[in-house]
Image (cartoon, rainbow, N blue to C red; front, side, top):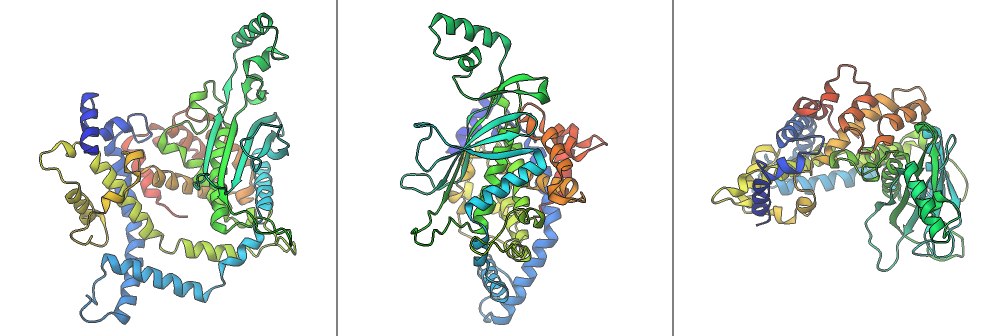
Length: 477
């Protein structure tokens, strides 16, 4: 019913399908371009999936009974033998649990500040919040200070779990950056004089008393500063006897880096209008800075900036993180294929197919899996009812894979090729100038082409050819 109504809405709006309508203002622009990207990515990913499936089949042959298809791998076998394989790998390597001792929350935040200072010339500076300024006593304020421009943003960190709070990590822009025009200041000054002056200056009146600053990067234009809420759900340390700090798992470190990537987009965004500032950009471009930040979380040169044992101050042996990452990405081919299948199903569901007589979502689901999956889907299953993102991501579920491919390319070609690696200020400046500062005020393809120095101009043109190029880059974390 949902898909049928969406297809009708698209037709009434003059579009061929809901996908055409949803993608008209995205980097992809059309469902045909999305399919071009997904097909190219599937071709790049196929050898890895085949290798992973062959290894699982060999495991099955060693213990499968004659009546359980010993020479074939089924959908249920994949999950079972992947679990067996990972358990075996974990037993042969050091336990990753020891990593958390090197990731106290304060240390990780300090590490992020050091990394941002190396790359972008900005620091995270704690500032005591005024009474009533925050929504909970656990919330901490950080001012973002730029070496050249001074105060450039405010971050409110709400990082600990509590009753009634959503467990989902998130980044919210409470107030976006935007340019404050001279006529606004004149109007604010006139109003201030007429009302007896609730604020000390016209600038304070124009910004409701919140932070503003002049941008040296933009001809000393006055901008209201972004105000950001960073939300996580970390456990509060139990007891105070040993004064043990909040220790993060490596997965939680990756989560914090991811959300800080979104925050960076808001911090560095400087656009004339607030509705295109920072993360207010095309859906298939919004995850790029956050996914890129996940690469920094496991980079040895970044870990060297901060990762030390909370009791002994001993630096972390970064090879342990490498072991953990190898475990987490061992079945990456299968995981990428799973996301490809969902993205392709999303495109198929949001075509004009739901308007066809006799449309059946289960048959369509089975058809997509039969065409694109390395393993057949068991007959009689109707998993699509559990596809929770189908509603919110209608026709744009490909976006995360798309941004992962672009982020991997930028990580490899911009940061890792530098002699200084992930902490190269030149690479950071390039990413800030070409991507972060523009938000949605510049076409995403021009941002990607700029940071990758696409001299041939193929990326900047966008369209199906550019989407196919991104798919050929593959997803390699």
